[in-house]
Image 1 (tube, rainbow, N blue to C red):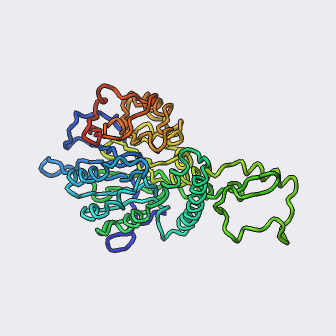
Image 2 (cartoon, helix red, strand yellow; image 1 turned 45 degrees about the horizontal axis):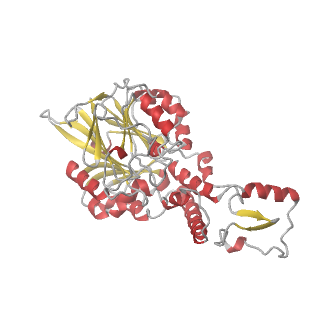
Length: 450
């Protein structure tokens, strides 16, 4: 299902990678310097959001190395913004000489792509070869368009609902409004990504099962797209059951959940209107049970659906496996975990970008258990604002044990006025970073020897 808009506006075929690749070598932590035998992954602390720069050494004829750079996401949630995004982009420009082989926009959430829109003028100065997006962001895809329209309508109605509750002083579940806001204000970033930033970059829309060989002229790089899938079962998570979320029962009467109308006018009728049937006792009981499902849950359901459209990219370079799953939640993970070679992939992982900022539903337990102990390093871009429940201590503890304490959090980087890890957060910051990691002013680097 992947499509690619080339520089001549024509679609290009995607090459498949060869099966039976050699077993990946364990990740060997490097000394902290970028050289011809070192991969560097740089995680920026920009608040609650993701911004990662992968630098791959490309051998030259004179035994020296140039580098190809892949930028994975660049966004921050409006309520988790610590105001370091511009500094991060300036550093990316300096490190790369304003040349990016690939820009990946994992999915359409503010905390992953907002920087592309807010700092569009800066990105317009970059030389960018390719942009990789999930199929769900392709405006020429009918299924994706239907998905986006449904989501936009529900988001608008939910915002009205939550604002009406706030005006009345009624409580809103912690984080529900923030979840809805994460779906808003991304139109400019999405459009810029779709048009290749206006710098004539090739744009690829990708889906689970796609494979690339030497993309963007990165010799020696193989890419497997593990998600998102396109199954109707997966997409059906977008549609909440009819009538389940918007009504409540008060003294035997059906009333709106708040003063802001949730249903469109065409669905509204007076209680005694002609042609409106009287509800049976069974219908009333069913409605009562469904009315107990709060609108807050719908807000979280919508953000989960978008997370499940995340581009899950496996980068394989000179025997090292780097996994970037965006914010993939269980629906996305399940598709490829059920494939025959999922255990083999996870056992080879050299680097893992922790999914969904360390949320409890971001990395399935079965995936953690299939990662080989001590073979990989991990990074999680996270902080306690706007969601105090993220990252989940139990998940972070399990990952830290599996990685043998080679996992680093972005909120270990001290930034003025930025939230520090909460008491009880895991893992606890060590006196010194694990071997292979080094800290900059607003970033942490992880080096892998080849």
